[in-house]
Amino acid sequence: MLKTRNRSLVLRERPTGEVGDEHFEMVEGPVPTPRAGEVVIRNEWLSFDPAQRGWMNDVRSYAPPVAIGEVMRAYGVGMIVASEHADLPVGTRVQGQLGWQEYAHIPPGGIGELTIVPPEIAHPETMLGVLGLTGLTAYFGMLMVGIPGVGDTVLVTAAAGATGSIAGQIARINGASRVVGTAGTAEKRAWVCEVAGFDECLDHYDDDVRRQLRRAAPGGYDVVFDNVGGSLLDAALFNIAERGRIALCGSISTGYRPERPAIGLHYYQLLTTRRSRMEGFLVTDFADQFDRARGDLSRWVDEGKIQASQDVLTGLERAPTGLARLFSGGNLGKQLLRLS
Image (cartoon, rainbow, N blue to C red; front, side, top):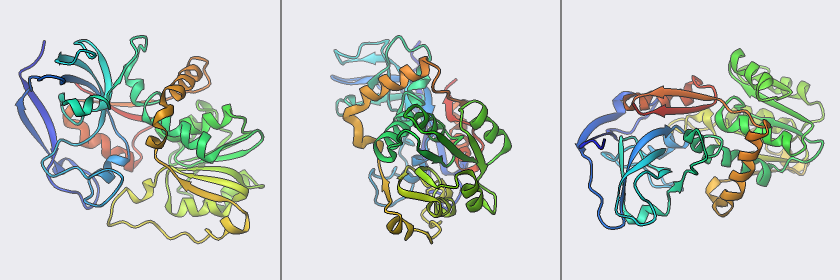
């Protein structure tokens, strides 16, 4: 039954440190009635991604910042419950930028950014994880930027995270002979090896991580898929192989906070002497290839070649906690929120 009231979490103030409840305000208003070309979606699942912390900063970036008083931006999956769009009838489940709210009102200009969830997908929340931007980021970052080949040695930082865990498994599928990860707890390191199938997983808080990386791959790393940045990226640079490739996916060590600059890199000169390269990317660069990538990812999941973990919270009021967990290391795998 369609409610008449909608709850939303809006940005109240920009955080200068860790994200908390105090930075958001719960507001309530009427559920909009769609006009011509519009739809209203009842949100079922919300995704948490490190980029959301960057969207809260009032700085120039690839996407405009979330405005004060605006619904916090987030990807989600939900069901269309009211529609004035001929191609999106009531009952259609979609994925898109739905925000921290119970109901999302999508105007005509936003319809093209929605993705219909195929009805054969039994667990629609996977469209936010392995079949969503998380899995797509791992897919394109590894295969189009890192480009692992047969016999390569690959390093994935934050390997117990939603993106890193999938990236390492894709490297193996593509022929890598050895895949090494890093993670912050014994539980996560065990999962990375025993479930995700990495050969080894190191403690990225180890003071001697640079030498531990060398011990795990004496010949260096042909591919580095980096989600952390800072001193761990520097340690990876120290251990890059000749003609190595570093795919810069994220920088979670900075918390995406403008007041917390990244630690300087000391070993970047090795990119020159070892004729290696380091490249950043955005998953949206490859939007025209999303369907093909989702087909590959879906097949690999069905074949048991990719294992994915989900960490689920329940209730809209817990959304700030979900985002904060990404930066405290509280989640194992994809952090999601189920709306009650």
